[in-house]
Amino acid sequence: AQSVTQLDSHVSVSEGTPVLLRCNYSSSYSPSLFWYVQHPNKGLQLLLKYTSAATLVKGINGFEAEFKKSETSFHLTKPSAHMSDAAEYFCVVSDLSNDYKLSFGAGTTVTVRA
Amino acid sequence: GAVVSQHPSWVICKSGTSVKIECRSLDFQATTMFWYRQFPKQSLMLMATSNEGSKATYEQGVEKDKFLINHASLTLSTLTVTSAHPEDSSFYICSASRGPANTGELFFGEGSRLTVL
Image 1 (cartoon, rainbow over the protein chains, first blue to last red):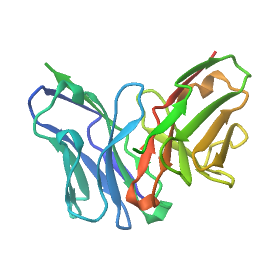
Image 2 (cartoon, rainbow over the protein chains, first blue to last red; image 1 turned 90 degrees about the vertical axis):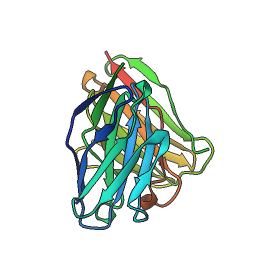
Image 3 (cartoon, chains in turn green, cyan; image 1 turned 120 degrees about the vertical axis):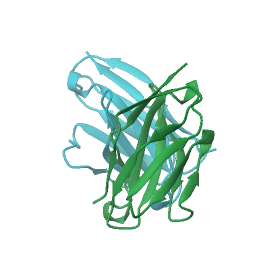
């Protein structure tokens, strides 16, 4: 079965500084990995996804993530945080073992200081 | 494109009543829709997978008689919380699949917050 561990429950950064959200995954098959963002009382928006193509994935709003099989990681980064980046971020994995259903990490809350 | 709409966004009901939440794919056909439940400050928990024209597949621990799911068409799935009680209060989110499951073509609704008094 697949699973995801988000290593930080809360990340606080200053506006204009880099953001790093850490995610480790477990999968017995070739996984698909995603990062979603959720603003308060809203649904989820896909930031980016990895599905066995390029290991460095660029997403929307300046975010990118790198798939590292040797480290079983899929960390999300952004070089310069904006106030609008304050939200909840979920790392998600899916693979064949669970009919490609999505398994969500516990989430990381990002706050951005002015 | 690829918009999923949920209705209502907010609903308050009395204990013992039933509440229906709709999930619509507005500009694409969704053969599969998923229903999730999210408690405050927690992640999403998959409740069930809804396939058009067939019975929903429920995850372990989810009461199918409590949470009735109907996927009557390729653009509409409904979740009915029957005889709701305060412990059913939660944020319910649906998602719709536009393509094969392993491509990640999943689009999420904005969620429906249910409060049971």
